Amino acid sequence: MFISDIASKYPKNIEKMPISLAPMPNETTKIDADYLKSILNGNNMHYNICGSYSIVKRKAFLITADTIYKLMDEKDLIIQTKLPIALPYNHYTLSISSIKNYGEYSWIQLTVMLNNQVYRNFFIQYVKKIDSLVPIASQDIRSYQVISKDDIEYKRVDYVPSYVITTKDSIISAKALGNIKAGSFFTFYNTQRQMLVNIGDIVSAMYDKNGIDIQTSAKALQMGYKGDIIKVEFNSKRIGNARVIGLRKVEVIQ
Image 1 (cartoon, helix red, strand yellow):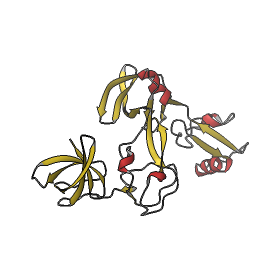
Image 2: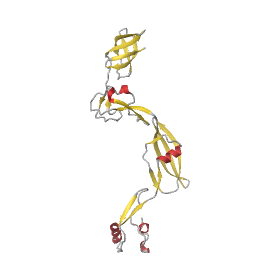
Image 3: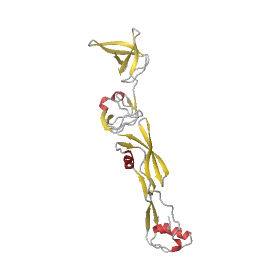
Image 4: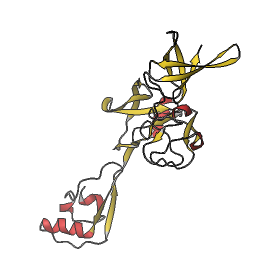
């Protein structure tokens, strides 16, 4: 920045005297009288300064979420890249060069053109909004507390991160790995599921035969959490599939 950028009157010979670096786009710099006087004195120039300070803001070209919505012609997106992106003010042309999907995440390559040449490329990460019911803590849960069905309620959300547990059966009987506040998601980081069946366990196996509930014993050939499908071996040496429903308890899948 020069004297001419902030002063209304000044000697012609110092018009282009640099006094400060220009602020970054969309940011401000404050130039006060004491600072300006020190710059002048440092150059052996002694002038009277009127006024107390000047605020200099550099105009910017902003890339915002609305910019992305318009380019994509879609608003049901959650932009995860930090916006806005500020560029030095100019007349740019924006376009989407490519879209790539990686699991739950998607990326767009945003190309910024200036004077018919590529000025910058930006990669913007986003996910599409959904409408889903996800289990959350209905009340505060203490560290190492075993989670029960009464600790769970549901919340409607438009995005579910991959680390969030979305099934109630995977949460019930799990142990809290730290305090979980009411309204929080249950995740693979704040809970630890209880292994209900281990390999070699003799389990109680239940199944329905012609409307009659039958209970027998079987040997677990795989470990499992609640809701998992595992293989079990019956006394007859027959091997079948069963769903884990409790501690050393399974329900035979026929």
